[in-house]
Length: 433
Image (cartoon, rainbow, N blue to C red; front, side):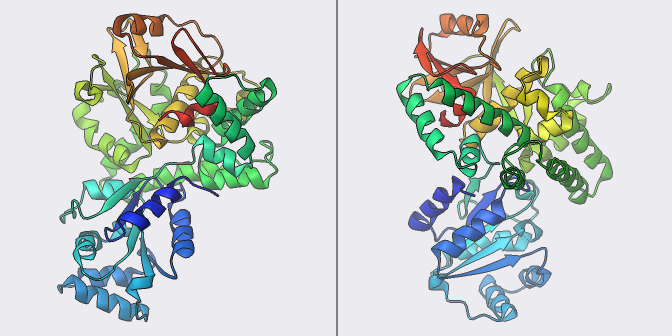
């Protein structure tokens, strides 16, 4: 399946290939698949090394010898005379070897034409907790996310619809009603399936029929996430806190306070007891953090209130699985309160996929703006609606007080631009950059 990150890999190859590339992202989002495809397509030769399966490589890099000799011994172990000029090496599950991560500095500084790419499960967590020194400035890092809605449309062979969506977004003109309804239907299907490639592929191979979709795929991914929390944490008490935070997020999204509350985990929960566990989850990229600012001023990240934030799940398919929502209730639009919560989580994942920092604004519990976008036009408020009810006291308060160049409203309503508000259908959120 086509992934947007492929172009970033091409850019690395063409401009900065001497610097090793590290792909960071949660388990099951398709890192290994897309990197293998890139290596096979773009280079005459490529070597794939999985450190979970080839532990001898880990042992070699643990030896007390210089990195060049380690690489030579690895070549002998692989029984290959590596043509560095025409070969790329892919180290998968690199989190298993701190020594190899540290050795990336050597590959970057060497006069030899090394081409190194690496990825791994919970790599973000490993980098935060390394005992060895990380080669700062010697590695290019790219964050990868589950498939966004555009990639889902590409996978379902809806390229013509993508073209029409982009045209209407740029020109602020309504899309044909039939196509608009078709796009909304696909959007609701995406909410159910999410962006995990295995789940999307199963949906496609089952004739894009949600009734035939194997829901156990998402259940298995969810369980693998829970297993990781125990596999990579030796302190079982700490692992239980990580799991408790993760499992609390669906209910936390419904908080009247509009923020994450440790007390919702357990009656006696305190920040100091769960801060390490929360940082683990954020580093794993299984969850997304949306920070509040009280003053929408430039730069917005400079006005974040540290202890006031929301947490979202990185995939809507997992969110629906945790809530045990029946797909029919999504497709037929039967949900009430949680429809808005699911919609907001969806928008968060699409913005994150575009590397937009997640921030929101609140004024003394009187008004709240779901997201703020900082771009060349300044700070732009983004309001999220789960339906086409466009009444919004909150957005009007923000506009009157801060006078942004324009505002964005994401809803089920068609494209348009009226009263200085850009109307963006939910299915076009991927275009906000």
